[in-house]
Length: 220
Image 1: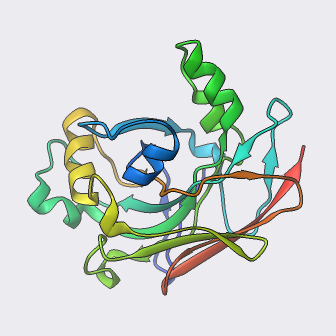
Image 2: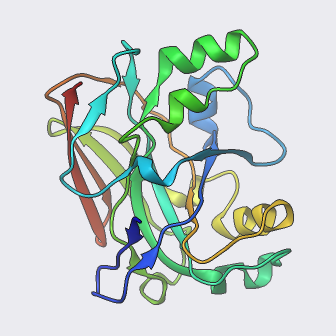
Image 3: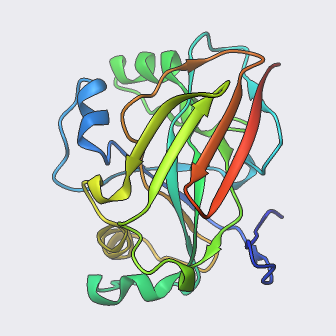
């Protein structure tokens, strides 16, 4: 069983469901040729796709276009159903940074065929995930900055203030459809600047001033 860990050494929490939010930044939606949806776009990754700081990200043999997507991650501490926006943040145990690694060519082919694209998002090592900063240290999750550098060159950087759907709104929405539980993680979406990586590249993702992770891309 994989666990969410904390930067202050608090007791780990078993990981549960990984909820992922698609196109939650307007500029990313634009670069993907899409428009912002009226409600959050949700997909999933399996928990066994999680890798922790320093672990390799393995390129599946079926892709020739593996892309990086840096994201603010949110760990649910107290679950619930129909959680109101006004109290949503009280259900958060911590905040971190993660990477939604995506086989873009596989995803595009599936979309074109009108088929699901779970393979493109949920493959082995597709969910790098940092330790979590306790929620008490983050007064406002919409006042954070995330970034990603590849081989030392900045690729993505944004303020979470520019998210289309805030953390509180995402929790409200998810809990109206699903039962949230302790150990659930929300990957809250990526900003513009997604691009391909190749074997040997080093990815450094950061939730500025709080936590960071580094991963090397390797061929299968």
